[in-house]
Length: 397
Ligand code: NDP
Image 1 (cartoon, helix red, strand yellow):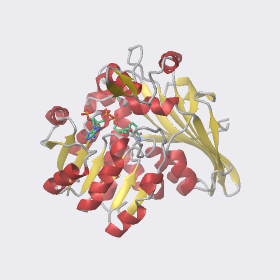
Image 2 (cartoon, rainbow, N blue to C red; image 1 turned 135 degrees about the vertical axis):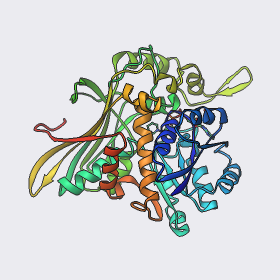
Image 3 (cartoon, helix red, strand yellow; image 1 turned 180 degrees about the vertical axis):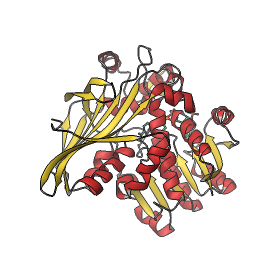
């Protein structure tokens, strides 16, 4: 039985703490630490069993080392922000502790969505006999596992991959983001990019649009092509893939708000001088937007995230669709969070469980598609993210 340190007490941290607390046979001791301790205490008070809490600034490696040495966890589950990835990885190396995160490292002043900084830690983790699992959320995370599962069980060769991320939930507010607004808006306002025939093709933000009829009563939704970090690791680990794209649904009103915010400069990550202080407009915007955690009780409807994989098996062309749907209100009832945090936090718990049970444990830095998808997919069914699979007769154009 294991001792874990969860860092980050936002929407995702709340779900990870709940789910780890539910799986007592694996996660025996849990400490939840974040920059603001009161947020950890608020979450601890909701849980069915006792966990410890602590305060830590995860940008400060000596502080992290001190906390890790005090708690002596088997691993750190990092669900603070992508800016802290390398600091926490450094602290894990210094203290001899395994590492897991849900988003690739981001330099604070550039939106890059690249794995190169973290992949550069491969030798260090391998030599130390430690494991770092990168991107164990839903996308990346489950979408990476879905791809590995499709390849393992259904295809000799994958030709195209389309990841479709649909949030059909409605919180009734004029404008809010479903997870950290700064990270979310940085992702959406960047150029789109996809992988085709060995190279990256760049598109303007929201330039490519498609409509897809989602299952389980969700119906037709508009999808827009975005760049998403798993495209980098999937195209590297499955070099046979001819084209890999990522799509996300957005409603017309959301896009209109975003366009206005962009036009007035509020989404910029470039700091400006304001009354003697330097401030990045997007950070100010984050401060005035609703806290994603507050959307939980308001949001109704479903999410549906999955992969459409086209390829061949025994010479025959096939189109496979594997997906999970989650109901916002059911998630809220279980862990007092909406489905976006839920669909990220559950895979973080399962990834940690895979490591601690030894099913995935191996030294080095790994993306999820490099590991056996089967035990992870089994646990998705057990712990609240049941998945479905079907065959399509038309390709996703
Ligand atoms: P939130 O903004 O809700 O929470 C972030 C938490 O991290 C807050 O508790 C915050 O503390 C804490 N934090 C920030 N900086 C520090 C620091 N320097 N030291 C310690 N704690 C810090 O974000 P979410 O919970 O929505 O997202 C968490 C992570 O999950 C992000 O990295 C996000 O990119 C990722 N994610 C991944 C997805 C996937 O599918 N793979 C999908 C959605 C999110 P404070 O409250 O004091 O600011």
